[in-house]
Image (cartoon, rainbow, N blue to C red; front, side):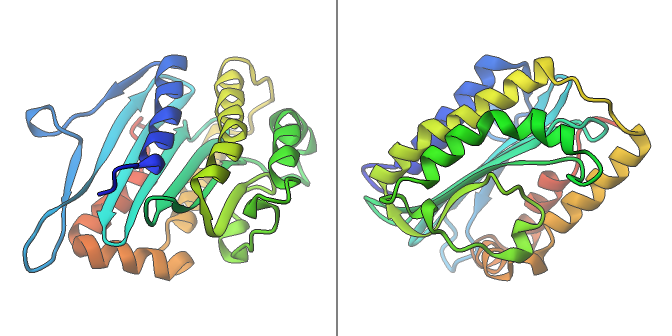
Length: 251
């Protein structure tokens, strides 16, 4: 789409980091292609991106890279989900590129427990990334220092999220990128070393199911899902939502 797809390059850097740090098995589609290959629903259907899907070894469940290619935006979504019965955070990142040098982005670790009942969990999981959070958000040239937040979405995320909800440029993503990669490295370390007593497994699985059902509810971000369905149609869009919200490992 552009000579400089820097949004795709950044998400692929996150993906490479994860593949190097943990065991994943990609679930391919026909002819060894991505799990889903999207086609636009325009009068002249054209390729509109893909969904790549990996089954992960414990304590992760699945990893997904979604690319939606439609004028004027090239949207990159990345998710690394932990097993439903664990307390390991989920991770998500997104870059939406609007041109050669324009984008919005966000990244976060999604907590699995309540901070009132489990303050020590937040100390273990989030305190180590606080320095990277402050370095990114205290740089006045970064829009994530003053990015507005949609409270309806924010309640399912963490206060440590990094994001630019208004257009910024490649230079900012390059400044903030190392801090997002630090989040990824921290999560991979937690996968090996997190030592926090897990509540009842059935309760955790039920909470995770409710959490993701809320997080991927179309009503939470109507504008975003309207854009997805406008590009892909209901059938492809709903299949994308299902794969995002549904664990691969049997409960």
